[in-house]
Length: 301
Image (tube, rainbow, N blue to C red; front, side, top):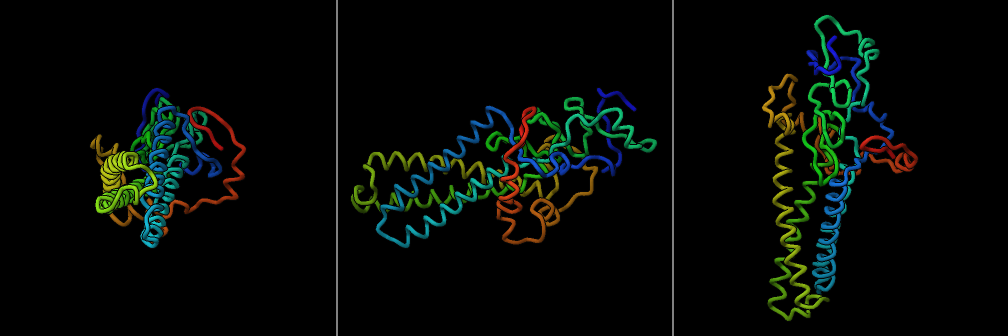
């Protein structure tokens, strides 16, 4: 057995006694990373979405004289915004697939009863047994299964257990951004034909400034999230994380291609449940987790 300072490679894809991500918290905890930069970025994300809701509702839709136009667009935009924020919250508070910390003790590795020639990864940074395709995150201070990248905007790693919610977050943000751009264009076109005072409760100058900032925000968000959404879908269909692609790692695992990869991430056969960020969320269980413990760079609720 090599020393604890050496990184060992698992020649078998999954040893039956290696811990799986579901065992890290026993499915009984809520994950949250205590990173200042990540928390600020997550707060900015929520502020910008709520700002978009304010402008769409109070500057464009409520002053409109067309009841059905306001009702349909208001219901659509606000529903997508709620789904976007819910997806963001699930991405941020879901364990991305963290490997148990500090389990690579001499006693534990001896208990694995490894066969001759069979070795395992050992992470020297968090002293954990490192499964195949896991990578260490310096911000989360944990090894993450199928780690794609660490995203400060969701204050979390994107990994095996929360990639689904991250994909939904990028999809819903791109949709509300496109919707906000369309509504802004329609509002400008309508107000040009009539007096500005008649199409907004705010003064013309304030309304224009609010709409311009909304358009800039929507363009940036739409560009970023649409590209990220496409990248994530491509990675899922090719069963290759962003880290593996950048490192040009040769696959030593059996790849799930296209729909098999999508089913592995979203679960089950294609259905509308794939678009639901509330899937698997139980209010009673969430309330039971309000008494928790703190430790390291993350804490459990």
